[in-house]
Amino acid sequence: MISQRMTSILCLSQFLDSMRGLRK
Image (cartoon, rainbow, N blue to C red; front, side, top):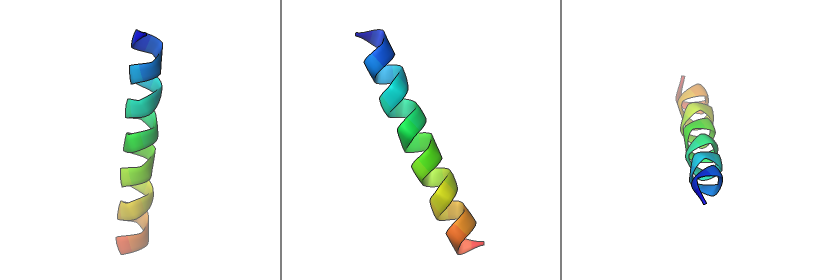
C-alpha cells in the first residue's frame, strides 16, 4: 500500500534528522 511506503519514508526522514541532530 502507498500508506506503508509513506510511513517508511517518514521513519527514514526522522532517523536521518536524529542523526543530524547528534552530529550537530
